[in-house]
Amino acid sequence: VGPNLIFSVIYKTIFSWSMKRAHIISIGNELLIGDTVNTNASWIGRFLTEKGFRVDEVLTISDNYESIVASVKWSLEHADLVITTGGLGPTHDDITKKAVADIFDSRMITDEDILAHIKKMFALRGFTFSESNREQAMIPEGCDVLFNNRGTAPGMWFQKNGSFLAVLPGIPNEMKFLMEKRVSEKIDTQFQETGFRAVKYLKTAGVTESSLSDDYIGNLSHFIDNDFEIAYLPNPGGVTIRIACQEKTEEDSDLKISELENYIREKAGSVIYGEGRDFTLSEALGNLLKCRNYTLAAAESCTGGYLSNEITNVSGCSNYMKGGITAYSNEIKAGHLKVSESEIEKYGAVSKQVALAMAYGISEKFGSDIGVSTTGIAGPGGGSPEKPVGTVWMGFRILDQHFAMKAILTKDRLLNKERSSIIVLETIRRVLLNIESMPYNLKQERA
Ligand code: ATP
Ligand code: MG
Image (cartoon, rainbow, N blue to C red; front, side, top):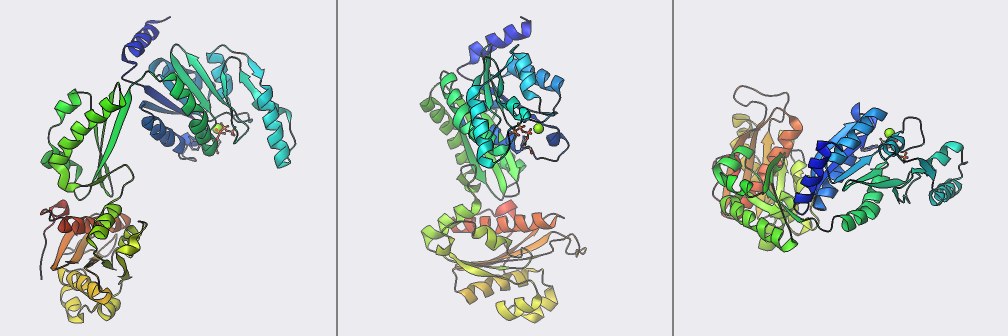
């Protein structure tokens, strides 16, 4: 018994109520060379987080006996729960089972239930049963079988010095089945005494990560000192603020997290459009439009329908979305949106005047309360010194307000479509809620 082990046992005992630490080990050469995206690790990470674990490490390793033994041993010493996936198949490269059996000094035995299950599955599919398939019914003596109704490789559950190990197949739907049906149950019985973790996602749009932190929220070290976890997660749609804490009881952790949530909302409420990991800006805006009874229409040039796509990703959007026109050519801008040809000639298609006229034109044509437009140079070609790639004009006619805004975005075409769509949605939201500052502090310009 080495000092590491003693330390880890003491550590686990003292902190067992407040921390449940997990490691995920993904096994397979195909993951390392990039042939397969490691979706298992992210799926399990999310699952365990929701179960109240703190996932400390994700290891991705090859189908190599020494690596598997070393990684699993390391993780069992440093985490309360270790999940491995991959390498349980019948082929020669699948050696996880052998490695794990050796860690636990177990000999391999045949499990008759599994054998019967495999034979039945083969018969059902009309395959002939071979000796290498018999191998699949072998398990290390002493483990608990996590019965795999979806496939032939069983999952296995081990226990060592207060830590637990689940060994699962790599095929994603089998792994998910075993996590949801078998591992979940084991966790619920083995980790009862541990604390409750509360996690919240606050979603913002139209503000950069640094501005959100510096100009809105400010210093949170007092909360961090009090064992809160706070993360700013930027993505093309905005910045998600994830906050988390862990307490002995569910009530305590809920109470504690609302303390931080209230603080953040007080500071940054105007840029938070909603909460929940998967809640979108289109949903937030949709709710607002429905509740105010306003309708919307979009005239899109550079976004080519992306904005309408975002808006219509929300179920029930027919309540407020009237429709849109992808007005890519000048001919369509003039013919269908009544943008004056002389203005297009004088100012160019990517201009304040054209954006204003497009927004006005679409709201008139479709009789909507709100009309919006985009016209820009999405790139990567087509820029000029006066109008570099990424220049986007967005037009708004929101009830009695009529204005346009210019943003200089990126050199990436898709990103520009995405960003300008988000800015348009967030602008409508802010105007309807009488929030003064515009996304990314863009300036409203009138005719
Ligand atoms: P089985 O015995 O059911 O074949 P296995 O444990 O042997 O399962 P692997 O042979 O390692 O699983 O992988 C099976 C398939 O699952 C592979 O095609 C691989 O692409 C996919 N897979 C393995 N690991 C992952 C992972 N971490 N994320 C996503 N897919 C994975
Ligand atoms: Mg494999």
